[in-house]
Length: 296
Image (cartoon, rainbow, N blue to C red; front, top):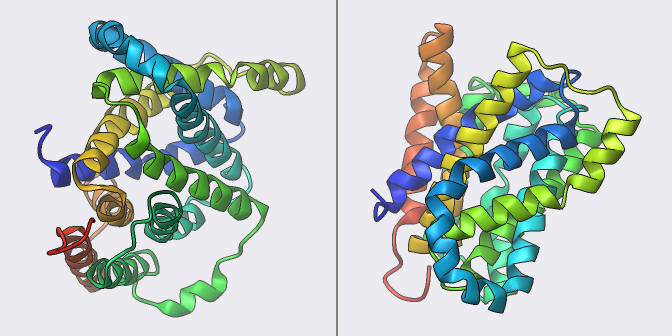
């Protein structure tokens, strides 16, 4: 499975499908920095036993690329997720999913700036096609629904977070030649550590998280699935096929979210679901195919 990039990227998208919902449910119950810190601190503890021997083996390479590793950790782990949860205090989960659809474009821009890699016409067509599919699903086939969506400062915060995650996705290709578990353990731990000053500030200025079952289950969910499983799969997928070809899998997140709603909430599939799913899957297939020439 570790050599199947499309499967890995689909697993990452599936794990992320519920993250915005859980983050939104946590608003008013778990402060955003606390949720991010607990998420990555617990994810670090989950990964560490499996990564320890690789960390020992890769320590020299980690020290040699320490600057890049810290930048990757602070941006993709600490900053992105904290801003995402902060944004959800002001906006709706639907807004964040809509904005997240711009992810492939953000990744393409960073790939051009940092790596000099241009998006191919086929990739551009696939991204646009899958984006149309996302809109069909989210808007229930009615484009006039867009006029009812209100954007606010939470959406601006989320766009900043998305730009940061695009930067992280491309920068992972510049990481030292280390094992995937070493990379995950270091970034999870370093990302959580950089949040400690903000956590202390938040504990002083805001009410503490209540230790009840819903809150603990929320923390456990985001630590295991959107963090540990999703990031391991996403990082490996990018390593195998590159950031531009992996980015269209952002559009699988709302697709999986809709499918989960059908399975767990009893929603009935309708024509717009079928059309949207077909467009997303076709677009992702076209955009993620290996180019006949040039780097992906």
